[in-house]
Length: 138
Image (cartoon, rainbow, N blue to C red):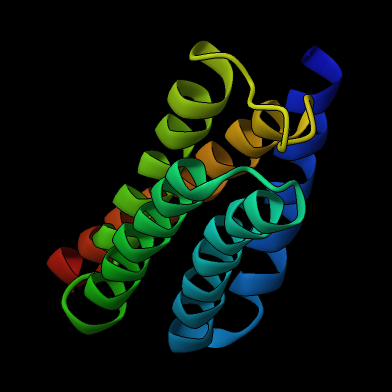
């Protein structure tokens, strides 16, 4: 479990590094794309793993909610992307770990995802706070 979490943290940091090199708008777009991909992966697991209509519908509902966070983050305020990534960590832990990992999801994936999600959420929060502090100082 620690190994998966650590790998998630490291790969999340790689996404942050790559995003920060894309400029302010490009950074947000990459975080938005990443959030959608993170949700789509679970939908893919449900389809490939023959999860059944109830689980598949639940995963699609999750995808729709993460699309909403993405839209809000790109159109309203970047902090919504951080909320979306943090919510995805809760989704991973609550639905796919604490409630018992469903058979269609690889056992270690949700733990990996929690580490990844929280690093990205924290990076967005730090970036938003840093920009707010810089604009107040100016």
